[in-house]
Length: 262
Image (tube, rainbow, N blue to C red; front, side):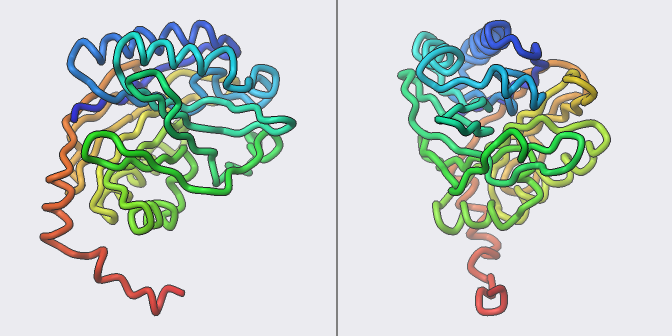
């Protein structure tokens, strides 16, 4: 299966402009045979708490129906980081839209970045469940940005939901670019799983984003990578057979000592 990660900048507070960019990158990916394309965190609004509070929408109108239209017209599956307004709450979410344009799965960010000056907890409610979806022969696990710092989440996705590939939608800033690069690699190696990480570039408010999007295979090999500061589309072929091969060669997942961890 060919997948792509779209490394883009976003227009702060302009979902229509951002949807047009999603359409253009999705068309480019489809033309090269990509079946699934991944976009960064908060692609609809940009990453600014005040702007998100002003523009966050329910998924019955606006940006997400626009994603559904793109997926259906291009016959491409899309995972995108988006805001989600549900009653009085706003969630930092990912949506999976299948090649028929249907919302097939979603995830609400479980680990909120509660550090000044961002303080996501003042804008978002936190999600309370991990989620995954099947596409082709692989099961993909959702995750968003700060989740990368919590390896327990990724292990639970592997053990409980049989995930073989992790998707990361991110708006990771420049001061910690080496953290991002190290963490996406670690999550792949320790779980013998693919990682498809789509990170932002550009600037929202005072935050500069560090790009460095990557696709990493279950051996820990970086099979596609992007720059730190340019919009790019990276892609790679994913194989469930490789996941099985790596896990059978070194059966580290079965060597865990649960009796000691709890």
